[in-house]
Amino acid sequence: MKVLIVGGGLAGICLGHTFIHEGISFKIIDAGTNHSSKIAAGMINPMVFRKMVKTWRGDELIPFLKRFYPIVEGRIGKQFFFERKIRRVFSTLDEKNYWDKRLTDETYNDYIHPYEDSEPTPDYVKDKFGSAWVKSPGYVDAKLFMRENHRFFSKEQLITYEEFDFKAFNYQELTYKDETFTHVIFAEGYRGKENPFFGYLPFIHTKGEVISVKGDTLKTDEILNRKCFVLPTVDNTFKIGSTFEWHTTDTSPTQAAKEQLLEQYEQLSTAPINIVEQEAGIRPTVSDRRPLIGVHPEIKNVYIFNGMGTKGYLIAPFFAKEFTDYLKGLKELDDEVNIKRFYKKHYKKS
Image (cartoon, rainbow, N blue to C red):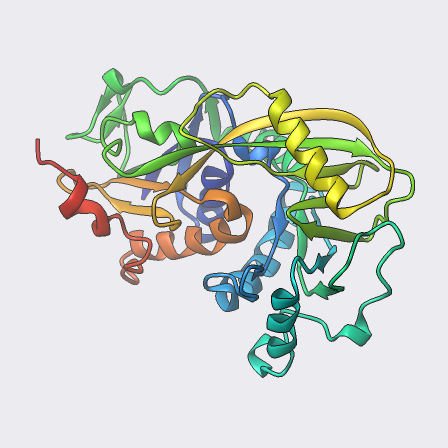
């Protein structure tokens, strides 16, 4: 196999490391634009808090990422995966009651802490209905992850920085600028909507913004979560996020998003903070909130690996391995992520 990966964001990087592990030859082409993977908080949240249920396929995704990221850290020689607990501050009495029910369910033992395990809520937290700890693996420092992985792939001469030229791509012969590949995989993030082969898929552009703040009295060993998250990073700042703005590709930070995040923070905490930075990016989300993985309906060996969405750092490692096994003919893709689910409704044969 000789694979061309178009896109060097989270999806492309996870594929690259999976291919290294599997001994598959590959090359990444990256345009160097947006990378919502870089501005993401990288928080690994194993719960859906509204009903206090496990995240989708968490029993498989979480153990896998806990093996995957340390292997990548060892390969590139840089730590980017850090342990942090999540303190969920309950929004309503119903939410607390859901938590109480989960405490009696053995299948949630690896997801939530009993109340007695959680330290007292910090004085600055507004916790009318109480709080407790979630057993999160932690978070990925997204900027560090992107920077150090690009450094690694550049050093190994596995990545080229250029805009992909579709006119130079012969999809029938699987050549790009006279170089022949066995497989071509598009992992372009939100730009997948512009892709002439996969633009028919139901991408939804969602803009997300975060602010970085200083807060001398905030605890540095746990993530606060209610309405927004407050995530302590290794550089002694805290990320507060994130917002959702639908159907836009404008990556400019906005005053409205900053005010929204500050308002949500003030509903959660009284600890004083100072804003250091504000960032924005476009997420490649999908109408059914599941990844977009699979082969083109008509063109052999042209694929997409995209749509990781807001939980990309949780989802991408596992499905990079699942996709690789599929490419090697070892298994079929899961129907929930296979783009075949959209062929009938969205694809029109050319």
